[in-house]
Length: 372
Image 1 (tube, rainbow, N blue to C red):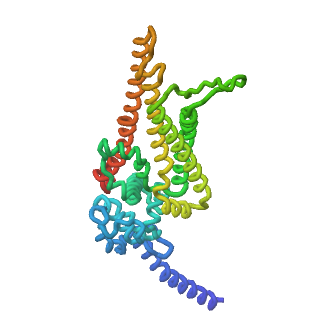
Image 2: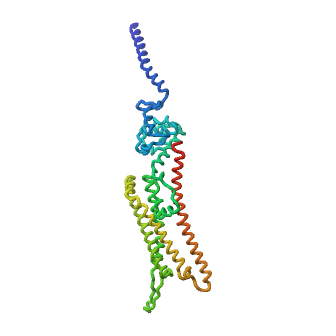
Image 3: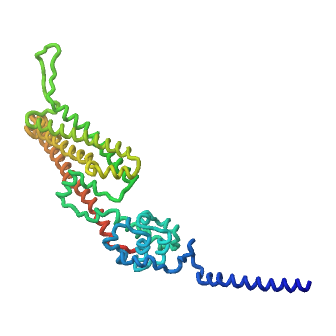
């Protein structure tokens, strides 16, 4: 029994010595880590990582050098270097998180404040600043043509109105956003074009000479036009009313067809490919609508001036001629002022505002360039 007691005591001493030898390296490892978070592969996110710092040469104060402007070509090291270069290294402590989670350029463009938290960025203030910087990066990358826009002059805005080119300045939209924009724009154009087409067709159809003959006496007929016009003014009225009717009709047709074609696209890839094949055709509904509006204003003006009973030329007759002539002038001048205000001032000024808003947004990004 005494022998067994001695053997058990010796075994216990050996076991304690082995346990101490095993625990000391673990304890030293724990002290070295100092409470820092480790990744699954053993890397310590609290220790500065040198991998991404070799890519800092790709950025100057957070701004990419010319050959790194395309964000979609960035790998995770370049992305981490971009984060580390921002605001003179303010966010360098988080660069390893981007590197470990393999956040490359395409993934970075889809980041928001919630995803920043998911990859381990604990500071709420830093998440806010980084999400704003990522949004700024996305704006600059997704709108290269916007950065080259110039404020058009007043005659340039008139040209933009007639050609509908101002409606082709949108950038950075994909998928459902692009589809929704096309459908809503074409639906609005189709609605306006259909309503104005009905009025233009009535002017066009009614401008032809109509004859009313008696069924009792075949030689008793009365012929006139529905709009009390004749000669050259009637020809102008007829031609421009017909042109406006056809412009409005084809504007509606093109808008509806584009909506149907957009619905036929199965996914974003098909939609973007389709639009790349027909970039200018997407503007046709708007171009035909404005052409129709311009043509429609001509018969209206001709009628106000040249109708026999109440027009300015040859003017009304009878005892109340002067009074009627005054009101004829008022109606014609009012129509001219409203039309000129719309086509020559208001619509061009709104087109100018579209360009101004885009240019000011770019300038604002330059003022706050890569700063939080």
